[in-house]
Length: 208
Image 1 (tube, one colour):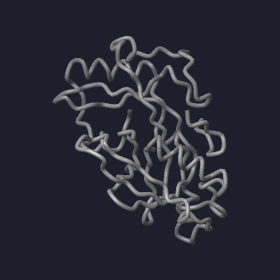
Image 2 (cartoon, rainbow, N blue to C red):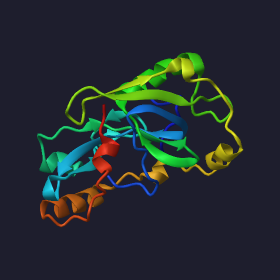
Image 3 (cartoon, rainbow, N blue to C red):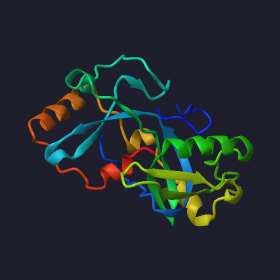
């Protein structure tokens, strides 16, 4: 199962819920629900589009690499490295979206939580308010800066509370693939017979 905010240590299939697209400048998210701890590989598919595949060597619950399951990506691409790719959900402008976390921003949130408490709590939680700014020409040249003085605790309003009650576990939103399912998809990728990948998926998962 996924883990709660206070349990996570911080150390690919597409979801049925759309992912939040970070924007340049000001961003505001009310995080909710549990956190999905995982690492993903980026495997090159048809037309050089990268496809995220979960690292099955990493245990979601223990937040560590234990190599208990067969990891076919590691077998097929032994030199390929996996990347930190934690995810949760958030309420943004009256909608629930998957939030693919940015590691450096997440570290800032955890530091702020030492003083402000659990940001996912419906009564005492707080909005994550931060700025996103480009720092160079490449896609990963991006900086995220939390604005802790603007992150004030507040209870969810009536509309947000209704959405909060319908939040599913991240295990249901993004189920962990089985080794057999991972192998089947990898075989399709290697044969250039993979279904069309959402054009926004690389932006959703880019870690910065």
